Length: 577
Image (cartoon, rainbow, N blue to C red; front, side, top):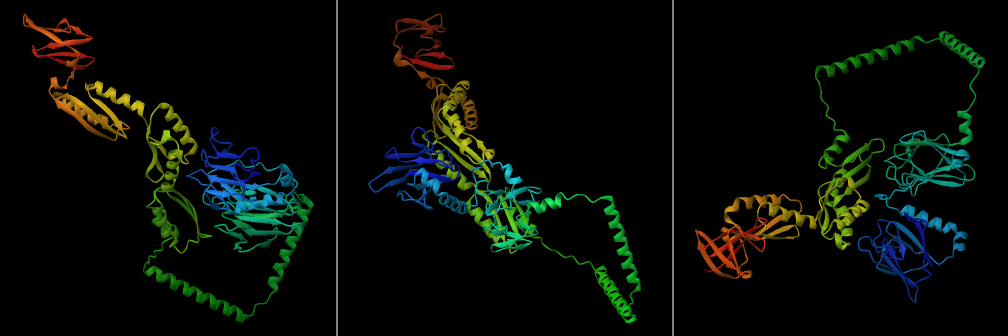
């Protein structure tokens, strides 16, 4: 048993299900048996295991569930030729051997063709390099598709008998690629049968397919003289030999040119002579003169009418009507083609409701027949990416939001610098609009050091602090005389990135109360005063002002307290003489 990738970024990959009883599919090489290099696949996306009844697939992804035969499933017993969509890749479940698959290539091709037709037109998030056109296709092919106007003007594509070619802008599903925004991913099919007869067929494109400026509704036979238009591109299909006869025909000699010139002069002289000999009846001349006179009078009357009074005709052009609707959405751009009444939209809107209101107003304009929608809804982009972030426990405090259309902000916290580097790599690989993303993520370790430094510089090292989900909690005591400095510190802290609010539990008090109390660590056994200077016995050692007590400088000794200081942090030892 095996899974064969028939469509998508992993096309051609084969997953053999014979060697084990259980397989994990996903992007994580440490947890998965089959690695799927597709960014829309979760780390652990699906599990396949054997049962007595057969192979069962189980969904493990919450952000992008698997689909079996175009339906989302949680657990499903696989059957022959079931189509599994995992991420953006479609797999076919089959029990056929390698030899059987080679003998029946048409079945796989049909499956691929069906997937191409069912592929959504709205979004393409993966781009693959276009295969280089084989040299023989351009030189030896009996037919040539020649583009005569549009973004691909001058391009030529070789075509063969008994084949069909899909024309569009999708490099994955189209055979002939047009870089024209008004062309659908799969726009038109050109078929050349074994008798060299050519047919064109529209594939349900939004802008339609035109032959000689007439829109076709069904498969239509064409010749090398017919002009085919898709979007803003016009081309024709010609036989290569006929084209060569036209392009490389030998130039006429001087004698041929001279003979041709003489014949033309002779023919013009003959026509001139015949015209002079023609007789025009008098009544015809009178009738023609009367018509000319009447026309002249009507013309003068009409001109005089508008000269007498200026009449201002106000006509609102279609483009102006569209601009009046779209002007409320600053990031949207549009292009309107009056020839086929097609409107192309691109840009960002904030919510789904905004897009619904916009489309309702545009659909009310009767002159618009088709709307090619390339609008990105930021609400959906943010939800999908935040769900992906939540899968990693290191990123669960990080989230994306949008303050206006097309302007994303990455906010939140990570614990360490290593977590921050991992987050940056993850965002660069998975976020679809990096050029519109502002990174405001804060590293918790760095923020802690920054807050401690600010408290120390302002002289409030005795205060303790804690960060809780962007809220800074301060506790402890500080000198009432330093109230102004404390308020300034609060303002500076609020301006620090990562701090959204402050809960102040710190209490202002007098200088003595605000000091750190070390009374329980020292035993004062004596006190004396000599020559107006106080001294005490602390832990059996006589101390006076200016001495060091366990590395702390004694700044003052009063009758009931010893004041100490170290590194701008103030302490006290209370005692009774």
